[in-house]
Image (cartoon, rainbow over all chains, first blue to last red; front, side, top):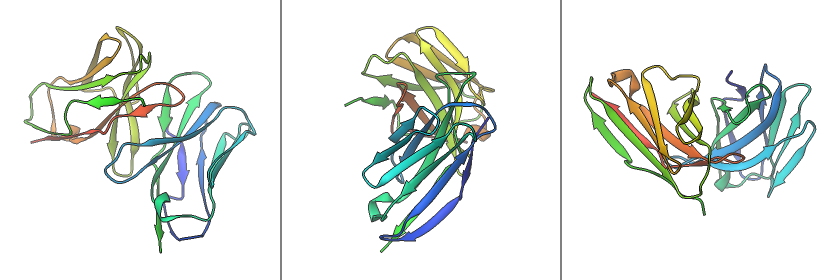
Length: 111
Length: 109
């Protein structure tokens, strides 16, 4: 079942922060985050495997609340290069290896 | 670096044609995936394979089939193309993480 992402779209000025949320109705084994720039392939950002795990990637970090089946991606002090569409992918406990992606969140960073 | 190569960047076919989309990876990955990407719908899984000759249906397999005769190659087949299959098709290989190809933009006229 496809996870839900919010917001659908967000516009930021350089230096502002943003949070993208991902939630599922299913028990999750892992959550994956990818970013896709216009006309390019999605690129892996990070995977969260354990409930409560937090990870960081430059000024981009994420958390995973296993009990709530939710994950959030945090973008701090955004840069122009952060623009793109962010996808969360969820791996359910009943079907390992199969990653189901959400509809994506479009993020635009403007000067 | 992992390389996932899709045979065509753009493809135009006619309704009713049998269409083959090819994907090759160079990292000896067991898992390979086919997704279609449509605006507002994200990446929807069509089929995936976790070994040679093994395949599993994703969320939207209707109208598609796949073939995996060799580990490095995973083919998506549109048995009889229809206009509602016009889309961007993305292949991926690997597991935690997946590595994506550049995509094939397929238009069915």
